[in-house]
Image (cartoon, protein in one colour):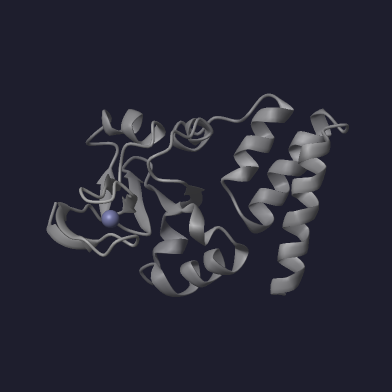
Length: 173
Ligand SMILES: [Zn+2]
């Protein structure tokens, strides 16, 4: 991993860290646990102790079948970011060839719903679907909340989150 200079957003202290652009999970299966436990892509500032995200996103890859998972900082969780990212940031042509997913996390914080993404599992309960919706955005989040409500139509938190997400989508289109 290349050594890069990063800056604390809180106090401006500069430090050098090894910053990874991509992690191949097929070659480094032990890292999957670290990813779920929120142990990648951040440091604490040595001066003010604030959390510093090394990069706005990390690419997680699987080889066989090829699959890319963009793990993005929660700060960017909105449908517009996702749309712009997939239309401008990713290598041209890769979208058609490789199954790609984007999820939003707070680096440094464990995220249990990542297991559905990393292990390609389907949630079984309404709560699990709702939690999965919370790390997505746009139509993908909407689908998760709808699945939660199919199992339990009285889940008011899922209803609220669904409406919020639909409002966000409306304002972008
Ligand atoms: Zn600092």
